Image (cartoon, rainbow, N blue to C red; front, side, top):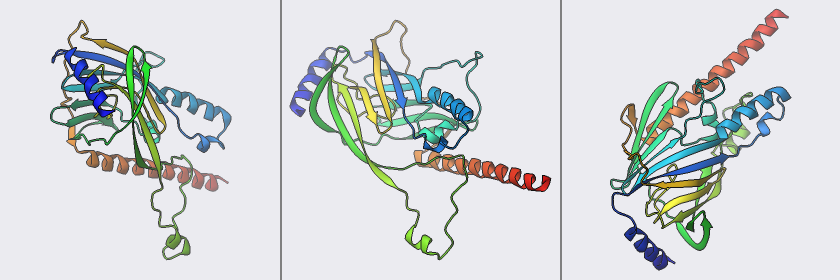
Length: 283
């Protein structure tokens, strides 16, 4: 199988000049557990589901050449003619990559530009190699011959709720001893379909490292599908890494986001507690 792929890749490379470039258009869909809304008033649940639909179904563009790529969401104007602003709490529920993502395939460095609570960050770090497993399966995606590759990984279970936080077990209690609050994990299989017909070792979001462009990927709760590819568009593409923002590593940004999420949750809990206390005073 590996020999066949190398042969296909060899002939594909011969069909492209070293300065070729293109655009790949993707659509993505994410599913989330809605159980946390089951006790919510129907009208409120309906409004939240409508908002979630816009956040869970997105379109992206990947600009690429033989050395780099630039991935970003297509801008969509919301009702009223303006872009959505304010706190995007959906990012804490779905955990999308978000922002704009530049990958330098030669130096193996990525730059992810993200905005968090009004502040712009440039997450700059090394691209972690992915140990893909070739399955030998093939299928047609549009006009391209696609090959299947998979990888399995352990992911941490994430829970989200606007409700009351679960009480911490008392120090020294049996619950504390039997439930050390270790994060729950589960095994997830990621399935990628790539085509050596487009010899670019990249794909949507952080996916890449295969001998061809990734056209389709299914990762846990998110599926991403390429719907169109345009080679050497009329307007020449300039692929550059974003440069404005505070430069941090991935681990540094995750710590900042985690602290901010806890801060927001504590503020929300404080407001709920204040309303309950006020209600008791009135009575």
